[in-house]
Image (cartoon, rainbow, N blue to C red; front, side, top):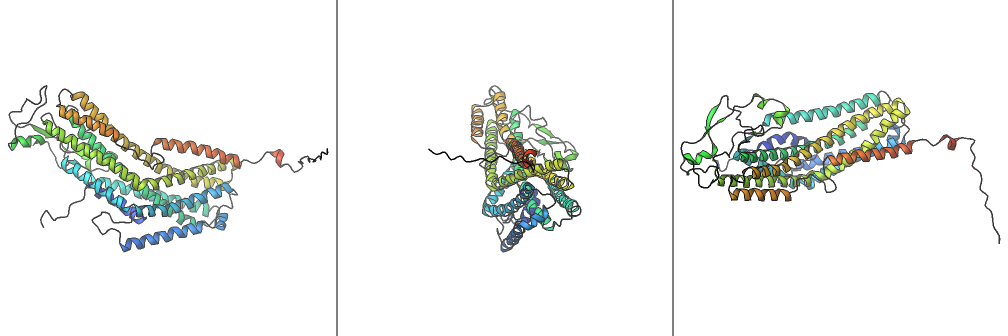
Length: 490
């Protein structure tokens, strides 16, 4: 088979994405095939989505039954707790249907995002010699998915032993409903987090490649020179010396008059450091690290090569900002709905804990323990999303600081064309939007602070409504004086 008609290989982005794709496909958040070149939405996909819709609708109809929830909440004798938990469960089931519908409408944008990130990752890997530990990252993602499902099953098992066995309440439908609504939420958070983390990873690569232009600082820990296949130090020819070897002309060197100085003599020989042993190990540093095996800019690079590198990195940064816009279009609406549902549950879950301390009954203590596990689960999801988005925004905005450092350090050494190109790069960075937003608010730490303050405020309202009236107003012998109506006649 010739190279022209051979099927192109997927980038590491697509390879790492497959575990998340299978989970999203299972819960109905990925109605189409993995990539646009495949058949798209098949009849089997539509049939599977119909089955998921039937399951969600069945759970919704069961949980709208007032008698069933009267049976669930009979030991607690709290209308506020009953309506809060029922609202939380129904909201989650409705959101499962809504999120699946949103992804059906947005399926083309998911393909656009996949193609964009796949192409950007290929450019970074092939042109800038970047390697990602695919196997280790896949293992890490599978480990996270298994731990999430284990926690979910453990919480549902706790429901069974604490509520079913202790309070003698049959909660079979409750287990199925909670599992249906939470696997959809977990798949959404995993998908959004991986989209965001990979954008942040590419931002970090752009920043590390830009730091080459600092020249004397490229040997720091921010840029790692290695080749995982090397067992010993081996001399290699620098990237920009290839032109000199094949008669492309002498290279220009940096100096006070960079345009007039020419290089003579033998090509420069550099040494590539051997790969560390941790490259293939299952560790956090390996998962979140990228490896540049060969730098393209050094002290002997020409001004044309530097201008070309700045243009390429500026284009990559622009495409990553476009990827953020696509992520906002794909997942921000669903994430906004889930954040609202989790906020409602925070209020009623904290109210349950208050009732456990206030009433002192075993029923409320058991329900407080169960709801506390859900609060921890949802807090972990919110903090994961906010941490990923905040880190991606920080890495994207850090690019401007690096370009400022380059201009400040080498404004007398670089040519006017390089300085002008770097200045235009900074101006473009100021105009690019790198925020993760649903249109109403940004997914950052200010949102988390707003949720905490609003939860405290509404919790105070619920406690006030739950407080019993004063003893004087409920005394049996208390009589209110009658008011006689006096008829005034003129």
